[in-house]
Length: 431
Ligand SMILES: [Zn+2]
Image 1 (spheres, rainbow, N blue to C red):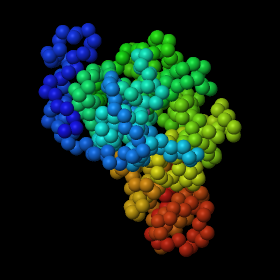
Image 2: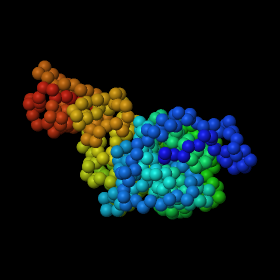
Image 3: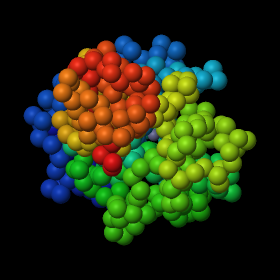
Image 4: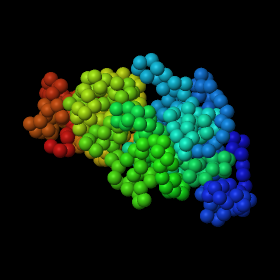
C-alpha cells in the first residue's frame, strides 16, 4: 500500500489550541469524501514513477507541514514530461525533473510522479510563516492548465480527494494547503526593491471550496511581519475580506492592467517566455530589455510561458494557428477554444468546430486552428471561390483547405480556376 490507512480523521490539531480533543472526531472536521470514494481514487492513480529522471537525487523529507498546489502552465503531455524528466532551455540549461509528487490532468486522471516520502523540487524560493525553502517540508501537486484558465470540475474532485487522503497521512488541516503563488517569493528585481510576493502566479485561480477545502489564512504572515512586500493582486485574491474573483484579469494578453509581471511573474525575462507582438514580431523574455524595453511591449501582446522549443516554430502564419509541443489550444485561443467560430483541423483530416471540443487539452499536436471563422463553404462546379467569398476571394484572411489537407491563404493561390472540387473555404466572421 502506498498510503497509510487511518480509520478516523485527524484534522484535530488545526485550531492549534485544542490538543485535549485528540482521539475525538470533531463533527465539523468530517472527512470530505467517503472511504469508498477515496479507495476508488487511490486505485486509479497512474504510477508514473518509472519515468522519473534517474538523475533526480532522492532525499527523504524530514517533515511535512504543507501541501502546495500549482498550475503547470502547460498541457498534459508536456507537463508530465517536464515534471518527471526535467526542463530543457534553449541555452543548454536543464533540470533533473522531480518537480512535483502528483500531476492531475484536465480529465481528473492523477499521476504519481515520485513516492511522497521524497523531497520534490517544486516550491523554489519560498517562505510561509517565517519558514523558508518549503520544498523540504511539503507535498507538491501540479494541475495541468494555466493560472488564467479555469480548473476543471474533475480536477477539483481529484485534488480534493488527494488532499483529503494526504491530510490524514500527515495530520494536516485545511490551512496547511496553500498555492505556490501564496508561498513563492522573489529577490529584488526591476519591479520590486525588496524581497516580495508575486514571483509566481501559479494556481491563483484555485478555488478552495470546489476542492471541499475550508478557507486559507486570513492574511499573509510574512507580509504582515514585514519579511516580504505583499503583491497587491495576490493579496486581493487570497486575503481580501470578500472574494473578488472578477477583479483579476484571466488572460495572457498584455494590457495596461495586465503587465508582463502579472502574467509571468519571475519568468518575465526568461528565455522560455515568449512575447508575440500583435505585428507578428516575437521575442523571448531575455531579449526584451535590450531589443524592446519593458515599457514598450505593445498592448495585445500574447505571453507564452514555458516555451523551450525554437522561436521559429511560433512564427505567426496569419490566421492559421498550430498546436505544437508546449502550445495548447488554450494558449492560442483562450476562452474561444470551445466557441463554434473556432475551427480545428485535426492531423487525421477531420474538421471540428469548437462547440464539439470537450477540452482544450484533448487536441493532438499538429492540430491547426482558425479563430473567429465560419465555414466550411465547399467549392464545387457550380460554386466558385468568388461566389463564396466575393471580392475577398484573394484576401490573405480568406482561408482555403485543400483536399491535400493544406491550409492556404487567399493571396497564396495562383490559379483559382484550378481549385479542386472539395476545397473548403473559411471566412472571418467579422466580415
Ligand atoms: Zn508552481
